[in-house]
Amino acid sequence: MSAKNIIISDSINCKYLASLLSVKLNAAFVSNVVSLPNSTNPFVVKRSTFSNKAFCEIEINSEIRILSISKNSIGLNENKSEPIIINPDINFTESRLTSESIKVSEEIVSIEDADVVVSAGRGLKGPENWNIVEDLAKTLNAATACSKPVSDMGWRPHSEHVGQTGKPVSTNLYIAIGISGAIQHLAGVSSSKVKVVINNDPEAPFFKVADYGIVGDAFEVVPKLNEKLKAFQAENN
Image 1 (spheres, rainbow, N blue to C red):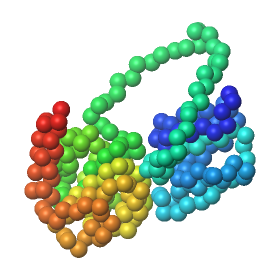
Image 2 (cartoon, helix red, strand yellow):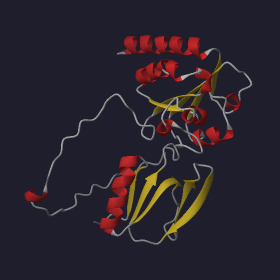
Image 3 (cartoon, rainbow, N blue to C red):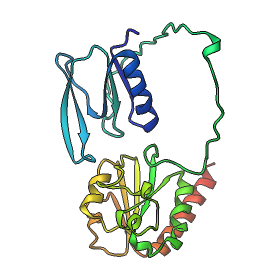
Image 4 (cartoon, rainbow, N blue to C red):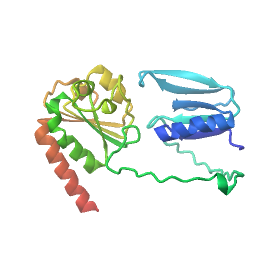
């Protein structure tokens, strides 16, 4: 293989593939990369750590480098470039090939791979009210998430807890419903491009970092928002 630098997404599947590929190619693998170097000598990249709270620089001395780029960390470059197509010659026999069918659920969107995340906090008052979050997420083909207190109280599984002490989120759109905005939660979602906050408390800290905010009762705002989105989708499909 002649490629020296292999750039991949920072998704779970891509990072798993990269770990296998790095062993096969005897290559260095660095995840969560947020900045690429202008020079290759030395080859130094910046990566996020501690749930995007800090950054570190890593010098890579390996001949082959595999880099997974954090979502929304690097914008488009106006300079035009031409791709180099590589067709590697892989020798294998058909007897070594096996296939397995796996049924994939279309109902669940993972937080790590989602372009849109709909998250909620204690403002929903109980797990029995989570249907308004799930309905909105379904309309937007989004993942559902929650704040730490919600997962601690058992309203939602810990796998949905986002924030500094949970899963960091770097999505294109993050909708926070009934979440006041503790500093740990804000740190975990800071890399999201657009943050929309729905809360009945106009002094909630989340409004200070939000791109858009709606002050109102979530039980009134969210269903109406969902209806408007469904109507918009129906008109444009």
